Every structure is written in structure tokens, then in C-alpha cells.
Length: 125
Image (cartoon, rainbow, N blue to C red):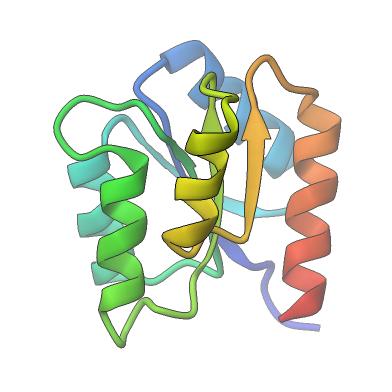
């Protein structure tokens, strides 16, 4: 057994970012947390994570923008992505999946459920 999978968490809400980071680290993951989409994309390109948890609504690059760029780049196209959002309309969910998201978690969410979904996605790869 090697090192734990590296995860990237991007959310402009510090409370949510800290909560998600804490819960994932508690579950044994190596987590890098950033506050916006531009930082998320730069971090993912520099050191591709196994999985990224992206807030959809961030200033600058949105989670959907980051998702699109990750999937378009050969170096990051295999990164698993969970979109985290307050937007729960079917149209928004469909746009996320159409963009290549592996899962979609709607706020408010259960941190335990998010950790479970991360584990499930990583087990599939």
C-alpha cells in the first residue's frame, strides 16, 4: 500500500472548503485546498490529483470551467471530478455530467456522504 490518493478541493467559501478538507483528511486522504477555479486549474496541471471536488459557483473560473479544461488536457483528463453546488435544477446537474463530472453533490450536503462518494469513485479507478 503506497501513499493515499491526492485530492484537490476548490471552494470560494472558506467554511465549506475547511470542512471538506478536514473530513477528507480525517478519512486518510492527502488534500490540497484552494479558493478559486484559477488556483484549482494551476494546481491540477502542476500536480494532477486522483480526484477534485469543485464548487460550481466560484469567481473567475467556475467549477464547470475547470472541469472542461481538465477534461480537455491529456495530462488531467483522467482526474475524477465531483461538482459541489447549491444549484440543484436538472439543467445544472445535466450540464455538470455533460461536461464530464463523475458525481454531483448538492449543498447543503452531508460531509460523511461526500467522503463516501469520494471513496466509491476512487475505488472504481
